[in-house]
Amino acid sequence: MNRAIVHMDLDTFFVSCERLNHSELNGIPLIIGGGDRGVVASCSYEARKFGVRSAMPIKMALRLCPDAKVVKGDYENFSKMSHLVTEVIQDKVPLMEKASIDEFYLDLTGMDKFFGCYQWTKEIASAVKNETGLPISFALSNNKTVSKIGTGESKPEGKFQIRETEIQPFLNPLSVKKIPMVGDKTFQLLSRIGVRTIHTLSEMPVLVLQQMIGANGKELWKKANGIDENPVVPYSEKKSISSERTFATDSIDVLEIKRLISGMAEKLAYQLRQEKWLTSTVVIKIRYSNFDTETKQHKIAYTSADHTLSRVALELFNKVYTRRMRIRLVGLRFTDLVHGNHQMNLFEDTEEQMSLYQTMDYLKNRFGKDVLGRASGYDFGK
Image (cartoon, rainbow, N blue to C red; front, side, top):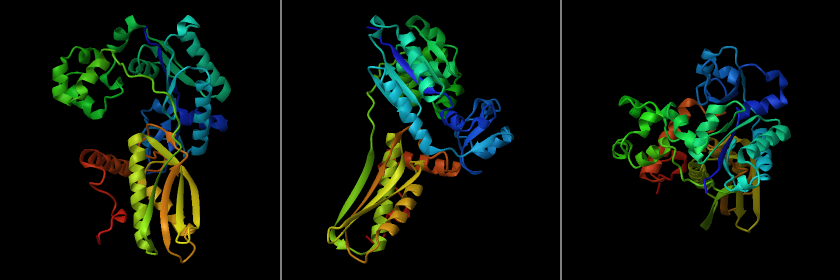
């Protein structure tokens, strides 16, 4: 049976959410992001016409588009609207994967016998727009890669079907950068040997690609030829991640406890980034020697950056530790998670901080998660 796989993507999601609540932002160049040293989290199509793109430093974006209005964004509202869209879609399909805060895969295989898959998808998109007010684009094909590329080519509010016989003619003229797994480094490597279109890439020998880029060479060749057997993974919401430490001997060493909390925050934040989660709530728990247990939590802007999470965790510890009594246990939990592709908090972090995290994560992935860390999380006396 031929598969029917849909990719749905909310158009300029953060921008659309802000415009729902602030109609004066309609029709103007709009940038969602942090301060002068931050980066662009999202931007409107009006701003994109000037060359503004996500993850671009805001200073550069404003040089390209001086008239753009910069808005920090309502993070809690973004999460609420994402959940609402999820519920609308999940209620209408047999199998859904939530790939990020604003994109979804649907598996409608076999549903043609009941109702045309394309017509069904159009009605789902209409339901999202009618029930949430948010514009959404989609593409339908027989696999995830082609559908995702199709959605990107159909925006804004596109409705696209790519039949099996149309897949290669659709892919061939596109840039290799349109393939989801192709980043800047891979694109530059391919460009140096004259491979800039998917058509050229699809005709390369698999062995040559494997020699150039390693084990992913075969996977890249398959995607260039419109082949992707990856299944749609059923959606499940992860609620929180946490870490606890029970001391062998009850402790009153505040500096040691704070060092431990910093180390916990760093390791949990690394886990968030690896699993592509963002958290919006930090919770600290302490248990005194008499077994009294106290917790304190604080809401923050969505992030996976340990310098932010560690700071908030330590501030919470200072507030919750109110007795001069020995501590038996300390715990840290990040909750209210949103599954997304943003590796860092694009709303607050600077370009330099993003580069630092990318380098740290690369080294941890290659040499082990304990290969390096922040000085505040290490005990140099041991």
